[in-house]
Image 1 (tube, one colour):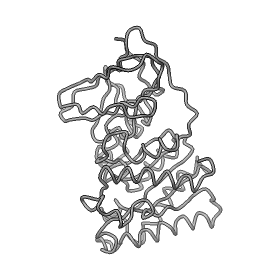
Image 2 (cartoon, rainbow, N blue to C red):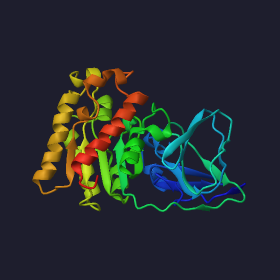
Image 3 (tube, one colour):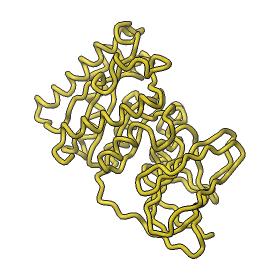
Image 4 (spheres, rainbow, N blue to C red):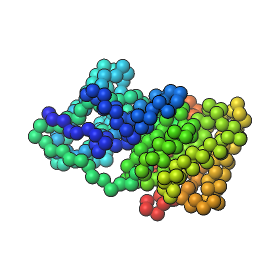
Length: 330
Protein backbone atom coordinates (compact mmCIF):
# COMPACT_ATOMS: atom_id res chain seq x y z
CA UNK A 1 0.00 0.00 0.00
CA UNK A 2 1.06 3.63 -0.43
CA UNK A 3 0.46 6.70 1.76
CA UNK A 4 -1.56 9.77 0.93
CA UNK A 5 -0.31 13.19 2.02
CA UNK A 6 -1.42 14.35 5.45
CA UNK A 7 -1.43 18.14 5.80
CA UNK A 8 -3.82 21.04 6.30
CA UNK A 9 -5.50 20.25 2.98
CA UNK A 10 -6.40 16.70 3.96
CA UNK A 11 -6.89 17.20 7.73
CA UNK A 12 -9.88 19.47 8.30
CA UNK A 13 -11.38 20.80 11.51
CA UNK A 14 -8.02 21.37 13.20
CA UNK A 15 -6.65 24.88 13.77
CA UNK A 16 -3.04 23.74 13.71
CA UNK A 17 -0.97 20.62 13.11
CA UNK A 18 2.06 19.76 15.23
CA UNK A 19 4.65 17.52 13.61
CA UNK A 20 6.61 15.39 16.07
CA UNK A 21 8.92 12.92 14.36
CA UNK A 22 6.79 10.61 12.23
CA UNK A 23 3.51 11.77 13.78
CA UNK A 24 1.09 14.63 13.16
CA UNK A 25 -0.97 15.84 16.09
CA UNK A 26 -4.10 17.94 15.34
CA UNK A 27 -4.84 20.79 17.74
CA UNK A 28 -7.99 22.86 18.15
CA UNK A 29 -5.95 25.92 19.11
CA UNK A 30 -2.75 27.30 17.58
CA UNK A 31 -0.38 24.95 19.37
CA UNK A 32 2.56 27.37 19.15
CA UNK A 33 0.56 29.69 21.43
CA UNK A 34 -0.39 26.91 23.85
CA UNK A 35 1.53 28.43 26.79
CA UNK A 36 -0.94 31.31 26.81
CA UNK A 37 -3.88 28.98 27.41
CA UNK A 38 -3.31 28.87 31.13
CA UNK A 39 -3.54 27.22 33.53
CA UNK A 40 -3.78 23.83 31.84
CA UNK A 41 -4.28 24.04 28.07
CA UNK A 42 -8.08 24.03 28.51
CA UNK A 43 -7.62 20.94 30.67
CA UNK A 44 -6.05 19.17 27.71
CA UNK A 45 -9.21 19.36 25.63
CA UNK A 46 -7.55 21.47 22.91
CA UNK A 47 -5.51 18.36 22.08
CA UNK A 48 -8.59 16.16 21.62
CA UNK A 49 -9.56 16.23 17.91
CA UNK A 50 -13.34 16.58 18.23
CA UNK A 51 -14.73 17.23 14.76
CA UNK A 52 -11.34 16.74 13.09
CA UNK A 53 -11.41 14.50 10.04
CA UNK A 54 -9.14 13.35 7.24
CA UNK A 55 -10.80 13.93 3.86
CA UNK A 56 -9.76 12.93 0.36
CA UNK A 57 -11.01 11.17 -2.78
CA UNK A 58 -9.76 7.78 -3.92
CA UNK A 59 -10.51 4.74 -6.05
CA UNK A 60 -8.89 2.46 -3.46
CA UNK A 61 -10.78 -0.60 -2.27
CA UNK A 62 -8.86 -0.66 0.99
CA UNK A 63 -7.86 2.10 3.41
CA UNK A 64 -5.49 1.69 6.34
CA UNK A 65 -5.02 4.26 9.10
CA UNK A 66 -1.94 4.31 11.34
CA UNK A 67 -1.51 6.38 14.49
CA UNK A 68 0.46 6.53 17.73
CA UNK A 69 -0.19 3.91 20.37
CA UNK A 70 -2.69 5.00 23.00
CA UNK A 71 -3.06 3.71 26.58
CA UNK A 72 -6.85 3.85 26.17
CA UNK A 73 -9.46 2.72 23.66
CA UNK A 74 -10.07 5.11 20.74
CA UNK A 75 -13.01 5.40 18.32
CA UNK A 76 -12.81 6.40 14.66
CA UNK A 77 -15.51 6.71 12.00
CA UNK A 78 -15.07 5.91 8.33
CA UNK A 79 -17.56 7.92 6.26
CA UNK A 80 -17.90 7.18 2.53
CA UNK A 81 -19.79 9.65 0.33
CA UNK A 82 -21.34 11.31 3.41
CA UNK A 83 -22.65 8.04 4.86
CA UNK A 84 -21.19 6.28 7.89
CA UNK A 85 -19.55 3.09 6.63
CA UNK A 86 -18.10 1.76 9.89
CA UNK A 87 -17.11 2.78 13.40
CA UNK A 88 -13.79 1.37 14.53
CA UNK A 89 -13.26 0.87 18.26
CA UNK A 90 -9.51 0.42 18.57
CA UNK A 91 -8.23 -1.23 21.72
CA UNK A 92 -5.45 0.26 23.83
CA UNK A 93 -2.04 -0.64 22.45
CA UNK A 94 -3.25 -1.07 18.86
CA UNK A 95 -1.96 1.45 16.32
CA UNK A 96 -3.91 0.84 13.10
CA UNK A 97 -7.15 -0.29 11.54
CA UNK A 98 -8.15 -1.19 7.98
CA UNK A 99 -11.38 -0.89 6.02
CA UNK A 100 -11.69 -3.13 2.96
CA UNK A 101 -14.34 -4.11 0.44
CA UNK A 102 -14.85 -0.63 -1.00
CA UNK A 103 -15.83 0.03 -4.60
CA UNK A 104 -13.31 0.70 -7.35
CA UNK A 105 -15.12 3.96 -8.14
CA UNK A 106 -13.69 7.30 -7.11
CA UNK A 107 -15.32 8.34 -3.83
CA UNK A 108 -15.06 10.86 -1.03
CA UNK A 109 -13.58 9.40 2.14
CA UNK A 110 -13.79 11.06 5.55
CA UNK A 111 -12.06 9.58 8.59
CA UNK A 112 -13.38 11.18 11.77
CA UNK A 113 -10.97 11.20 14.70
CA UNK A 114 -12.02 10.65 18.30
CA UNK A 115 -13.94 13.40 20.10
CA UNK A 116 -12.88 11.79 23.40
CA UNK A 117 -9.13 11.08 23.28
CA UNK A 118 -5.94 12.57 21.84
CA UNK A 119 -4.80 11.18 18.48
CA UNK A 120 -1.44 11.52 16.75
CA UNK A 121 -1.59 10.40 13.11
CA UNK A 122 1.14 8.53 11.31
CA UNK A 123 -0.13 7.58 7.84
CA UNK A 124 -3.21 6.81 5.78
CA UNK A 125 -2.58 4.14 3.15
CA UNK A 126 -4.45 3.22 -0.04
CA UNK A 127 -3.97 0.38 -2.54
CA UNK A 128 -0.73 0.61 -4.50
CA UNK A 129 -2.51 0.84 -7.84
CA UNK A 130 -5.19 3.26 -6.68
CA UNK A 131 -5.32 7.01 -7.25
CA UNK A 132 -6.16 9.70 -4.73
CA UNK A 133 -6.92 13.42 -4.94
CA UNK A 134 -7.68 16.33 -2.68
CA UNK A 135 -11.38 16.82 -2.14
CA UNK A 136 -12.34 20.20 -3.52
CA UNK A 137 -15.21 21.82 -1.67
CA UNK A 138 -17.20 25.01 -2.00
CA UNK A 139 -18.89 24.46 1.35
CA UNK A 140 -19.11 27.35 3.77
CA UNK A 141 -17.19 27.10 7.03
CA UNK A 142 -18.90 27.09 10.42
CA UNK A 143 -17.15 27.33 13.78
CA UNK A 144 -18.99 26.22 16.92
CA UNK A 145 -17.71 27.14 20.41
CA UNK A 146 -19.09 25.51 23.51
CA UNK A 147 -18.66 23.14 26.43
CA UNK A 148 -18.67 19.36 26.78
CA UNK A 149 -22.18 19.54 25.33
CA UNK A 150 -20.53 20.71 22.08
CA UNK A 151 -17.56 18.33 22.34
CA UNK A 152 -20.13 15.51 22.71
CA UNK A 153 -18.17 12.86 24.59
CA UNK A 154 -21.25 10.59 24.80
CA UNK A 155 -22.15 10.77 21.11
CA UNK A 156 -22.64 7.40 19.46
CA UNK A 157 -19.43 7.88 17.48
CA UNK A 158 -17.16 10.73 16.27
CA UNK A 159 -19.27 11.61 13.20
CA UNK A 160 -22.50 11.61 15.22
CA UNK A 161 -21.86 14.60 17.46
CA UNK A 162 -24.43 17.35 17.16
CA UNK A 163 -22.08 19.76 15.29
CA UNK A 164 -21.20 16.98 12.81
CA UNK A 165 -24.88 16.20 12.24
CA UNK A 166 -25.75 19.88 11.75
CA UNK A 167 -22.84 20.29 9.32
CA UNK A 168 -23.95 17.24 7.33
CA UNK A 169 -27.56 18.46 7.17
CA UNK A 170 -26.51 21.91 5.94
CA UNK A 171 -23.48 20.85 3.86
CA UNK A 172 -21.07 22.92 5.95
CA UNK A 173 -17.40 22.40 6.74
CA UNK A 174 -17.27 22.52 10.52
CA UNK A 175 -14.70 23.45 13.13
CA UNK A 176 -15.69 22.26 16.59
CA UNK A 177 -14.33 24.24 19.54
CA UNK A 178 -16.29 22.33 22.15
CA UNK A 179 -14.03 22.10 25.22
CA UNK A 180 -15.32 19.94 28.04
CA UNK A 181 -15.64 22.05 31.20
CA UNK A 182 -13.69 24.89 29.59
CA UNK A 183 -16.22 27.14 27.84
CA UNK A 184 -15.40 30.19 29.96
CA UNK A 185 -15.24 32.83 27.20
CA UNK A 186 -11.53 33.52 27.73
CA UNK A 187 -9.86 36.25 25.63
CA UNK A 188 -7.38 33.76 24.12
CA UNK A 189 -10.24 31.72 22.68
CA UNK A 190 -11.84 34.90 21.35
CA UNK A 191 -8.56 35.78 19.61
CA UNK A 192 -8.41 32.29 18.12
CA UNK A 193 -11.93 32.61 16.69
CA UNK A 194 -11.19 36.15 15.50
CA UNK A 195 -8.21 34.91 13.51
CA UNK A 196 -9.99 31.90 11.96
CA UNK A 197 -11.68 32.69 8.66
CA UNK A 198 -15.22 31.27 8.66
CA UNK A 199 -18.68 32.04 7.27
CA UNK A 200 -20.71 31.34 10.42
CA UNK A 201 -19.96 31.31 14.14
CA UNK A 202 -22.01 29.85 16.97
CA UNK A 203 -21.26 30.46 20.64
CA UNK A 204 -22.97 28.65 23.50
CA UNK A 205 -22.85 30.65 26.74
CA UNK A 206 -23.59 29.74 30.29
CA UNK A 207 -23.41 26.14 31.41
CA UNK A 208 -19.69 26.02 32.31
CA UNK A 209 -19.93 29.50 33.82
CA UNK A 210 -22.74 28.22 36.02
CA UNK A 211 -20.85 25.08 37.00
CA UNK A 212 -17.57 26.80 37.86
CA UNK A 213 -19.19 29.83 39.56
CA UNK A 214 -16.65 31.98 37.75
CA UNK A 215 -18.80 34.90 36.60
CA UNK A 216 -21.31 36.82 38.67
CA UNK A 217 -23.99 39.37 37.81
CA UNK A 218 -21.29 42.04 37.48
CA UNK A 219 -18.98 40.13 35.12
CA UNK A 220 -21.13 37.66 33.12
CA UNK A 221 -22.46 39.98 30.42
CA UNK A 222 -19.29 42.10 30.34
CA UNK A 223 -17.10 39.06 29.64
CA UNK A 224 -19.29 37.73 26.83
CA UNK A 225 -19.61 41.19 25.25
CA UNK A 226 -15.83 41.62 25.32
CA UNK A 227 -15.38 38.16 23.80
CA UNK A 228 -17.67 39.02 20.88
CA UNK A 229 -16.06 42.44 20.44
CA UNK A 230 -12.66 40.75 20.00
CA UNK A 231 -14.12 38.51 17.27
CA UNK A 232 -15.67 41.54 15.58
CA UNK A 233 -12.24 43.21 15.26
CA UNK A 234 -11.55 41.07 12.17
CA UNK A 235 -14.93 39.52 11.40
CA UNK A 236 -17.31 42.50 11.61
CA UNK A 237 -20.19 41.00 9.64
CA UNK A 238 -19.84 37.21 9.96
CA UNK A 239 -23.16 35.92 11.35
CA UNK A 240 -22.88 34.94 15.02
CA UNK A 241 -25.44 32.81 16.82
CA UNK A 242 -25.26 33.29 20.59
CA UNK A 243 -27.19 30.51 22.30
CA UNK A 244 -28.08 29.99 25.94
CA UNK A 245 -27.93 26.64 27.79
CA UNK A 246 -30.11 23.67 26.99
CA UNK A 247 -32.32 22.37 29.81
CA UNK A 248 -30.25 21.81 32.93
CA UNK A 249 -32.51 20.00 35.45
CA UNK A 250 -31.98 21.41 38.97
CA UNK A 251 -29.77 24.19 37.60
CA UNK A 252 -32.80 25.90 36.11
CA UNK A 253 -33.94 27.38 39.43
CA UNK A 254 -31.15 26.54 41.89
CA UNK A 255 -28.68 29.43 42.31
CA UNK A 256 -24.99 28.56 42.08
CA UNK A 257 -22.43 29.98 44.49
CA UNK A 258 -22.55 33.41 42.82
CA UNK A 259 -26.34 33.53 42.69
CA UNK A 260 -27.00 32.55 39.07
CA UNK A 261 -29.68 30.21 37.74
CA UNK A 262 -29.95 29.05 34.14
CA UNK A 263 -33.24 30.94 33.87
CA UNK A 264 -31.44 34.19 34.73
CA UNK A 265 -28.51 33.34 32.45
CA UNK A 266 -30.82 32.90 29.47
CA UNK A 267 -32.35 36.30 30.16
CA UNK A 268 -28.92 37.94 30.27
CA UNK A 269 -27.67 36.16 27.14
CA UNK A 270 -30.71 37.44 25.26
CA UNK A 271 -29.97 40.95 26.58
CA UNK A 272 -26.44 40.74 25.16
CA UNK A 273 -27.80 40.10 21.68
CA UNK A 274 -30.27 42.96 22.11
CA UNK A 275 -27.40 45.31 23.05
CA UNK A 276 -25.48 44.41 19.89
CA UNK A 277 -28.58 44.69 17.69
CA UNK A 278 -29.51 48.08 19.17
CA UNK A 279 -25.99 49.33 18.49
CA UNK A 280 -26.02 48.46 14.81
CA UNK A 281 -24.83 44.82 14.70
CA UNK A 282 -27.50 43.13 12.62
CA UNK A 283 -25.49 39.96 12.20
CA UNK A 284 -25.81 38.51 15.70
CA UNK A 285 -28.75 36.30 16.63
CA UNK A 286 -30.08 34.79 19.84
CA UNK A 287 -31.09 31.14 20.16
CA UNK A 288 -32.79 29.93 23.31
CA UNK A 289 -31.19 26.65 24.35
CA UNK A 290 -34.60 25.34 25.37
CA UNK A 291 -35.54 25.39 21.67
CA UNK A 292 -32.75 22.87 21.12
CA UNK A 293 -33.40 20.61 24.12
CA UNK A 294 -36.02 21.38 26.77
CA UNK A 295 -37.59 19.81 29.85
CA UNK A 296 -39.65 17.41 27.73
CA UNK A 297 -36.36 15.75 26.77
CA UNK A 298 -35.03 15.35 30.31
CA UNK A 299 -34.95 11.58 29.77
CA UNK A 300 -32.12 12.22 27.27
CA UNK A 301 -29.92 13.68 30.05
CA UNK A 302 -28.81 10.60 31.99
CA UNK A 303 -26.63 12.62 34.39
CA UNK A 304 -28.96 15.61 34.46
CA UNK A 305 -26.56 17.67 32.34
CA UNK A 306 -25.08 15.91 29.30
CA UNK A 307 -27.23 14.47 26.51
CA UNK A 308 -26.89 10.82 25.60
CA UNK A 309 -26.31 9.69 22.00
CA UNK A 310 -29.98 10.15 21.10
CA UNK A 311 -29.97 13.61 22.68
CA UNK A 312 -26.98 14.72 20.64
CA UNK A 313 -28.67 13.57 17.44
CA UNK A 314 -31.77 15.56 18.36
CA UNK A 315 -29.63 18.63 19.01
CA UNK A 316 -27.92 18.28 15.64
CA UNK A 317 -31.15 18.19 13.67
CA UNK A 318 -32.76 20.97 15.71
CA UNK A 319 -29.75 23.25 15.36
CA UNK A 320 -29.86 22.66 11.60
CA UNK A 321 -33.49 23.78 11.67
CA UNK A 322 -32.44 26.96 13.50
CA UNK A 323 -29.92 27.76 10.75
CA UNK A 324 -32.62 27.27 8.13
CA UNK A 325 -34.93 29.68 9.93
CA UNK A 326 -32.26 32.37 10.38
CA UNK A 327 -30.45 32.31 7.06
CA UNK A 328 -31.88 32.41 3.55
CA UNK A 329 -29.19 30.19 2.03
CA UNK A 330 -30.43 27.11 3.86
